[in-house]
View 1 (cartoon, helix red, strand yellow):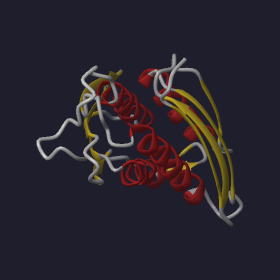
View 2 (tube, rainbow, N blue to C red):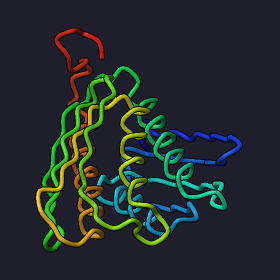
View 3 (cartoon, rainbow, N blue to C red):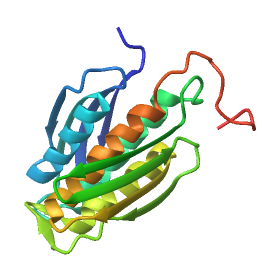
Length: 195
């Protein structure tokens, strides 16, 4: 049984979220946010990171999709940050290139404890399904801030916005899978001795 499991609840006037995350899972995902395309992206993220993820969100979709996307990013990031604690015994760095048909995404992560996000998906459409394209990026930024991760996401090529977004989330999954991997050292991966 994994010891890197957590459950978190977050309730505000804008959203009510319950999440369960297991970093040493099999990629099983049960995601329900009320936004089909966000569910699709998070399911893909869990599958390729091999995280077990259960996420249920009731957000104020009568307003728009912003709070739901943002808060899901914050809660997932918070769960990862709590699980990593001092970030002892992990690889820390991860990167991936992922092709999805004509699209090619590059993601680099550093679980440094220093939040920073540089996200350039170059999406041309306003929406993908029920999710505003700006909130596809905003989720990633919110996740990076809450998980205290340095995150760089670039789409190197691609004409189809669905492919661009999905390849980015799959690349994030593979980069996270590398970065959270245990190195059996029990060391904090920093010359500073703290992250």
